[in-house]
Image (cartoon, rainbow, N blue to C red; front, side, top):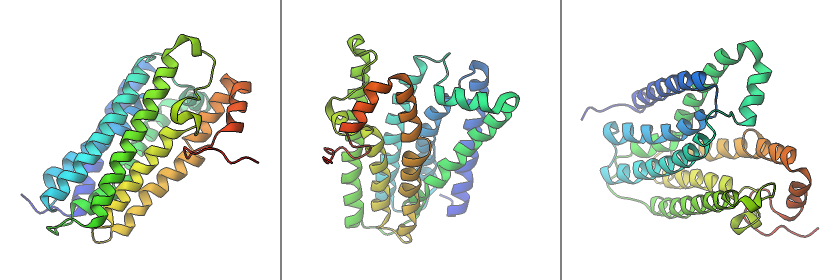
Length: 265
């Protein structure tokens, strides 16, 4: 096996993600639905995992663990999104339709740039994976075992939250209502919470490798995006537009993020 540097592996990953996103943009242009970018943003992480598994010089068992974790989590989330989005493939999600309307005549060129930025974000967020896959120490540390356990809990939690929401929406009697069952009884966004915990688990796992502390950038970025940018703010705005009264009542009784009973005021 060639001894590739971390910069070469990052470049290979960036090229792969950019090519994938360029092809996805062509598809989205033809169907007029930019929402498909979310599917392949998730699938790009398994692509990076495969590149690292095949080319990184790290200890084999460590690579198997982290690449397997990344592959399974990305595949599960991407497939969940694919099932949801392809059900209304010809109907663009409101947040992307709003962006397209704001960009006007320049929407498609800007959308291509947005897709490429998503590809770059895949590689930036993969910093923990690069750090871990470069570690040649032939023994796992307590951080790696702890990260593995936290990852398993987080993936199961996210899958449960997604399933509970899907089952709620599937019941026609719930049309116009807000999902407040299971984990959604305690948090308005338990799926986002467990998604963030998955990234925390990668950080914990990376602490067993040299320079592992740098991996904090990934859960920090994910947390900021979820709380301030594309996650919770856009989701709550859409819910308030579609069912204002019901959602306001829901907001008053639930935690915004952590699945825990809201403190009484």
